[in-house]
Image 1 (cartoon, rainbow, N blue to C red):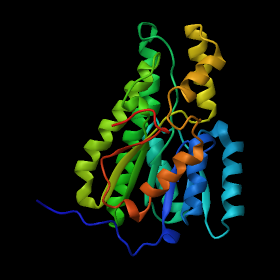
Image 2 (image 1 turned 90 degrees about the vertical axis):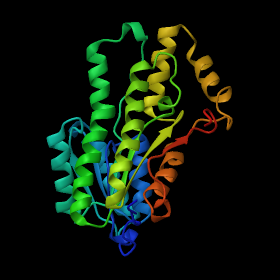
Image 3 (image 1 turned 90 degrees about the horizontal axis):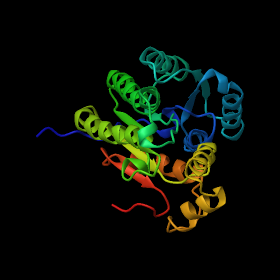
Image 4 (image 1 turned 180 degrees about the horizontal axis):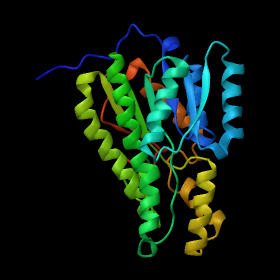
Length: 274
């Protein structure tokens, strides 16, 4: 059996470059800031309509971590040509690509029998197809560089156990989990590790939008639903914060995770156990 060595340890964190998609707010923003704090130069991505938020992230990186470079790259990551151009621009601006964090995603909530083909296509395009494009195009660049790298993507605890009225969302996140395992098998020989992270109930705009939708669809009071989700479901008894997730991505992006690949890391405060 051939052996895959660890990613190049000669490249220090201060030389390394990370690209984070969906970085304008929430978990993506926290990841971008955390990786900058770890010494990475960071390219931040989102849709052009999020330009003001991205500018704030870039400014915060540069003000807090003055030695770190940052750049903004607008792209719709559900389109392969835009992902390819996003990675090319990252290399042009920052010199290389060592860590790809495919964080961008959307939520869908509704009864299974009410889901449409349009619902399915939209959430699969953003949540699953975008990860495929990011993994594939980033891996090509990392192989060209010859130093290995880290591919990391957003899944969810719904990739382990779906929630009521979350069928399409769970489907998209199971796809990410399976893709991560399959890619890890093939890319190990190139010194590329591939892992995904599975957040639970994290205090973001997406969480509030989702709970409001489920409450409206089920007739449950919003306060009761939120209390049940947090205090009766999670062992830690609190909402997760974006920084809780970012700390774990810091590990996956570091040399400390060189022997970790094909995994889906659950970050949920004790909701789902495997």
